[in-house]
Amino acid sequence: GNSVTQMEGPVTLSEEAFLTINCTYTATGYPSLFWYVQYPGEGLQLLLKATKADDKGSNKGFEATYRKETTSFHLEKGSVQVSDSAVYFCALSDNTGGFKTIFGAGTRLFVKA
Amino acid sequence: GAGVSQSPSNKVTEKGKDVELRCDPISGHTALYWYRQSLGQGLEFLIYFQGNSAPDKSGLPSDRFSAERTGGSVSTLTIQRTQQEDSAVYLCASSSTGFTDTQYFGPGTRLTVL
Image (cartoon, rainbow over all chains, first blue to last red; front, side):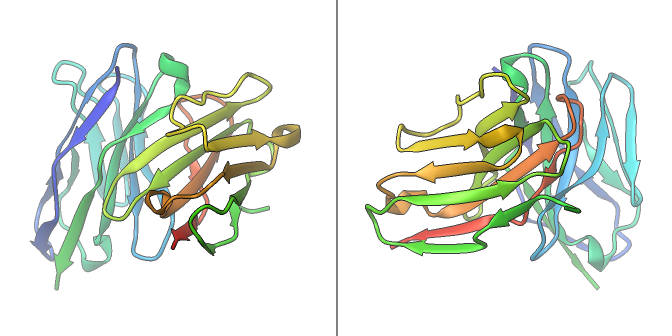
């Protein structure tokens, strides 16, 4: 069945550091891939998405490229800010298994000033 | 409304009682999802409604859990004979059509079973 594996946290970085959060997936179909973010005290919201291979999703300085050959969708940001402190979830959905979305376990990011 | 709303925001109940959690999706969204988020854990899929199709119930953890969606809009998640392990935040999300669409999440209902 489909699955999503993302790096365990917490990840602690200093402001302006480079961020990578790894995400790999297993899917039987041709999935769409998502990164969702949950800021402290707030609900989940979409950060970015990519719906086919080689697509790059980007938003708020974050980027992720859909790599079919490595089944990966790693999240990157060149220079993190304290306000990026949150929990980040990688997710997958496709047209097998009833269209449900599979979420990774989440990676908590702490950014220090 | 402007977003997905859920009620109540917090629910404290005694073990063995039944609870009902409500979700109002974004108007016009045909897909509705329920998830459970336990402390420090990821999101666990519970159930998915899409239009008039039969719901995907494959994530419901036991027959104590059920959900319905009336008129293609409001959904209610019911947990019968609650147990302490049911304590979690229950999240509802809706999306406009299919699986490539962004899901918009509600604020969640925090359920505590004593």
